[in-house]
Image (tube, rainbow, N blue to C red; front, top):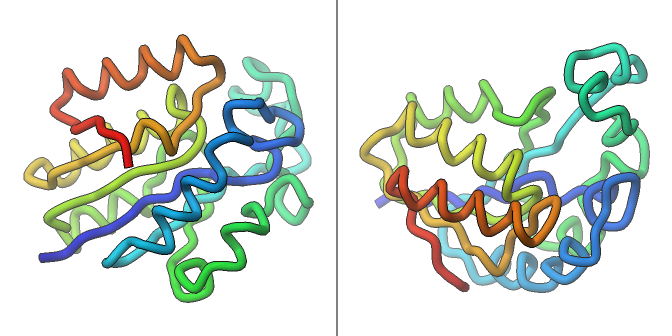
Length: 173
C-alpha cells in the first residue's frame, strides 16, 4: 500500500512573514509531529514566485510579494527542515496554487492514500486536494484539519466543508 503525506507550503512567509497568521504559527508543531510519525513517503511543496510576482495575474489579485525564490520567506520553516523526512523527501516548487508536478505523481504512482497538512487550507491545500482527486480518483485523501490553517478561521472551515463534499476525509491528527 503506497501512502504519501503532502506538506503544503509550510514556508516562512505563510507562517510569520508577509502573509503569516497566528493560526499558521499554531500548527507548526503539529505538522512536525505528523511528519515525524508518518510511515510512508513525504512530499513538501513550496509556493515559488519570481521578482516579477506583482506583474502576474495572481500578483495583481493578491498584491503582496511573498515566497520569492531564494528568499528567507520562500524557505520551508526550520522546524520542518530539521526533520529526516525533509532531508529524504521530495520537494515540489509550484508557481500557482496547485502543482502540475503533483498531478504527474498522482497519475503515474497512483497512491492508495494521501494525507495532507499545511497552508493555506482555503487556497493551496484545497487546490491540491482537488487536483489529487482529479488525477487519482481512487486515492483515499485525508486532510488533518488541526494541522492546516487558512487565511482566516472562517475560510479554513469553509474549505474543509467543501473538501468533505468532494469525498475528502477531514479529521484531526
